[in-house]
Amino acid sequence: MNKLYLKLKFATIAMVFALIVVGINVFGAVSNVSAQTTINEPIQKIIQNTSPISVPTDTYTVFEQLCLADHIEYSEDALMGYVIGVPDNTTRFRLLRAYPELTFRVFNAEQGLIGRPLADVIAADALYVWWCSAEQAAQHVSQGRRVLQLSRPIVSSISLSNEVLSDYFYSNAELISLRPEEIERLAAVGTIQIGLPDDSSPIISRDNNGNPIGLDHDFITLIAQRLNLRVAWVNCGGWQECVQALEARDIDALTFMTPTPSRLLFSQFTVPYWQVDWALMSLENRPIRLDDFSTEKQLTIAVLASYSILETADAAENVTVLAVNSPEEGLNAVLEGRADAYLDSLPLLMNRIRELNLTGAVVHIARDLQGDQVSIGVRSDWAAIVPLLDRSILAITDDETRRIEENWFDPELLREGLNREVVKRWAVIMAIAVLLVLSVILAWMSHLRREIQRRKIREAEIRYKAYHDELTGLPNRMHVIEKAQKTLITHAQNKRKCALLFIDLDGFKAINDNEGHDAGDELLVAVSQRLQRVIRKTDTVARYGGDEFVILVTSLTSVKQALNIAEKVLSRVSMPYRLATGEAKIGASIGVAIFPDHGHEYDELLSAADDAMYAVKESGKNGVVLAEVRSAD
Image (cartoon, rainbow, N blue to C red; front, side):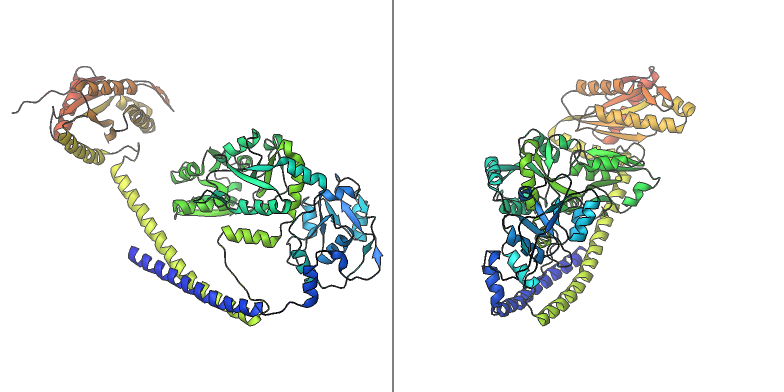
């Protein structure tokens, strides 16, 4: 099965390589044809002209009006501190001719330029100043809010197509308009030190040369370019350590943050620059979905202790939150059964699952959870630059955001020729055909991988159950026999001593008979836990059967050392136990056999230790006896 999987994998790689070669040839031809197309002369002049005043217009002028949020100062000078939303490029162009010092941005999903409609941005309180028609202005005033009548005359219409306007604005949208005092404010800040947390790929990390890379790096680069801002990325440790570094002002800003009451005490937040979904990782045999939060089923969800989502998860009545310090700890909690699911942001979670090759994991996107819009957290004493960062963030287009996302999250490289419908149609047909073939192959490969992984997991589970006690989780009789036989061989070669301790619990039967089997099982688990804590890492404790335990002690320097360990075990086992039925106290009879003094084979040592244990029983129980050296007869 492994050979078949490798063959399919190599076949898929070869097909993808062939597709790339064909795509380069096809799109290279399209580019050559497109390069020969001459740009319409009027459009070319508009793109090259950096002054919108030169565009011909009619002579009819009006005085436009802007709707303001409640906290905005009622003056034209105050407008220079904000992005002003407009519904289309025509309105934007008209306003720019009269107010070239202001920053206008189009919000219009139908045009496909920026993305979100203007009304949605206003409703989300992400925009504080926007152009409004006479009807909209009247409605705004009726709600007790303010409308600013602009003082400069504005041309009511222009004779340019929307396509021309789009080309013009795309060629003049690099920098944000800043007032002199704002430029001085940024200059006074100097270089902004932005925290770079560990284990945050593909959001932010460093490449092999130590250079910062990732989605946040690309966003910050766009923001810094528009503000002519200097930025330096500083390693700050784990996420919680980075939050603490921002609080201590060891760094100036931290990306990928959401505001919480505690964070607002030491930092200011920009408008969101990206939306990220939360996701749950669980196992195939017990998948967890967000719907399970509203059922009566009790769940344990592992979450990083520093995440803002912790409060939301903790508020669910049937959810117990297991706060963890690292993603590895959270994932291990799910794998070990201590948690039903691990909650993390989707891109970080997917990257960690790929790194650990957790093919048995199930990921459910929790889209309905709040707190999935991330911002830049800035130290509170630098709050004056937050409005400038807001303006730069709001100027990021949906195309730019999409390009960044595709760069870091499974990009699909779709290159289309300019105005060549036939080529585009064939490219789409070819892409669909190849994707269908690849989908079938990848689905079959994924099935094979899951099947191989399931078999490995089943084999590991079978082997674990065969060599471990079901109740206590300790190695069982078969396990300790194999371990002892290997240990005797190595100790004989190195001429070292080792010991076998045979332990029988005194008083266990009375508790098991009087208090019930549940109490007896609880006591056995407690004893096994104490035995594991008292032995060394190189030693092995096993449940031999019933209330009998065996400890294999290796690399002894003397017989006295073995007896001291046995006395320590006796002291720890004899301490009182707190059970569900009340306090219980037991003792132990321990027989000690030394290799090679009491035997050269495991059976000889076990028999000698067993005889010594019965000697303790006959002498009054709860003690330690060293086995007697048997005669050569």
